[in-house]
Image (cartoon, rainbow, N blue to C red):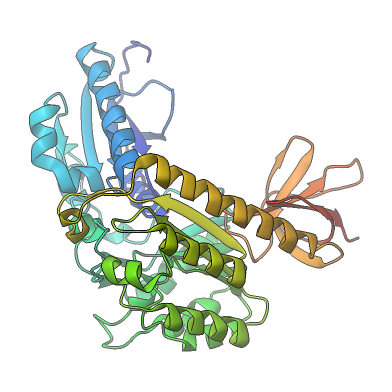
Length: 437
């Protein structure tokens, strides 16, 4: 980092972790901008104030957060920056430990302490800016956080320790925010939360995700609405009816299942069985023909046997999910699973991860091969290496398949526009297409 003296305060916000953290950073940055701060994000440019928005979900994320704090603590000791602040999940969970171990940080703040952080910077928390953000995504899509916290009691998960109990936002506030996003050019919104299907239970005394989708479907300018992070237990199946009926809601659902062995599910406290999970997937595909199901699995949970893992492999082979992600179990303090012995060796966790992902690679290749000849509507995200890169309604940014359209001399596409294409080739995780003229 350069040592050039900066006359005006410039804040560099460093964001680590998931899309929910990104939204928090977007809100923070907009508040700072409206308080006349010069604000940049995750930049190599000079800045005299650093704010690190940390992740504390699993070991690798915690390690990345700690290393980033240490990096900027050293910069502060060398006089390259003036102030260093830390916020987010790691800070919420380990504040006292961090204060003791890395005292070079000027102050630590939890996940819900934005007003206190702004006050430390001598900035006002502007209530009239609620719902306004400084987007860190490309301008044509944005994440919409519909709630905070989680009331689930999964034995492996530390999110309730860091984010607290579930708190839904009102439908009115979410519609207002979405209208503002649309006014600024956003065409696709991705609904995110720790748990989507719990939405509304606290404020409306019922699951209200379908009502929210109907309201958002009416926002002019928004063309795609995508659902992320839905919990399978007690899933409100009327949501499938909404996906099928509402034209702007993508035929896509991100629903982390974590495992399928009843033994492992019970120890994970997932409140669902293999039979119930299988039935839910059947209902989803019956009610929404062609739906793309994205899920994640957790391997190496305490007590997971080779038999349990083989059951998971067989399930994935049978269900043929469109998208699969795999995480390795991380032994987290203060979770109920921490009381169990972390008895699956690291090399076995890695080996099981590779086996599951290899199976999914084969499935994805076959599913993509079947799409050759299909016509699709895609949203163009960027131009790269001689291709326009887009996504269909069945794909979320960064984690799913992409559609590549060769940027020929007579091919004119704009970033953020939709295009109709015909699929001409495929790989395991990408589709190649021609523009339909």
